[in-house]
Image 1 (cartoon, helix red, strand yellow):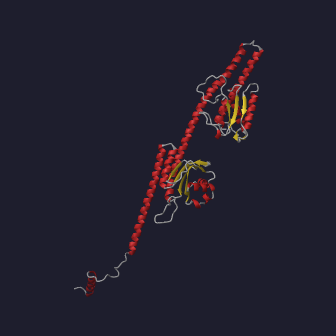
Image 2: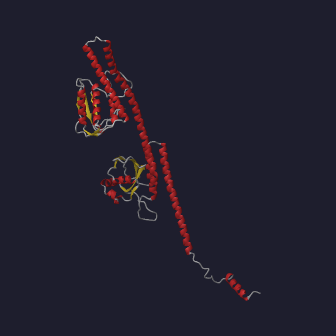
Image 3: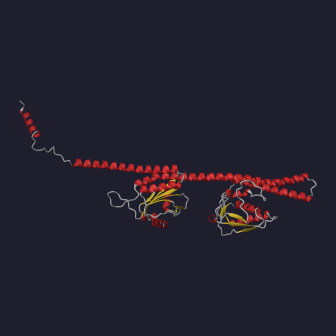
Length: 458
């Protein structure tokens, strides 16, 4: 027998569990809060997953572009080819209307646009001159060495406050602008530009109707990752160009040494032979008439002076080539230098018959910045050689032009500098041709002082 109290409790439990008539209030629960928390958790997980996918896709695009440009750099030394690949792939990836890449430096005043990517219906800027000196947008980018972007060109004070930028943006149809400097170790190598133009679809944020800035964080990070690779391509191109220039200079130096050897062999042989003959004649003919003896002595002295001048020219050329000469450049009149050189020539050749010399150098030419003493010496040497290779009945013309007006030089000739004089002789070839072999000539050959022109960098 169970106690009465325990039996009552068992009966009550049987009634509630076996045959429940109504759910007790303690068992009833609301599933709403749990469902809301579950949905929120799922949405947060989905957002994180989408964000991770988007980040992976962005990194994949960056790596693909970096690998593409790196492969192009390794396969080709042609910077134009590398920049064409970079500008096309970057423009397509960023979905910009126009993408530009151009090489420039801190001191460049302007640049001609060559490498461009365009969307359909966008006007091209290839071949146009882009001013850099008085360009506040470019100068701001260079000074900050950071990416500069403009969401709305029509409301940017830097663009609207500059007439040139305003006209440029209107002619190119630019509505949004992005500039990325290509800098390596503090040195500006070039600039990368992305444009959104009029008529292009404005980027939208999913779920929103209002337009937003076209430059999102992904595009900025992508451009920042690509810029160093483009800078490497520009550095490689510059190094290749410098190496090519150095090889040309070495080749020119070897040719100069060969020419100098040929000139030395010819120029020294003639006066030495004359001095030797005169001295041998004086020594072997003690009974030589006084007049003939005086002629022999004068001839030996003249040729000895000529030898001294040749040796001085060789020493001067050696000092110039080694950089041991300190030049004192100043603004001087080229006409005055030519007049002084003509006066010096007249004094040296007063006892000789010289051809007619006509100077066509006018005062209209701008002043040249050069060392006056050296410039006069160079012009005098040129005139001296012109007189040697021109008959007494001939004529020598002295002309000077600006560098942009000069004709292309023959291979092996150094390009004249601005307002550099050049002596022209009728029926006479230039004295700076490349001799293949030393050949005897009826008159003494050109003095090595002609080589002072490239050494002085006038």
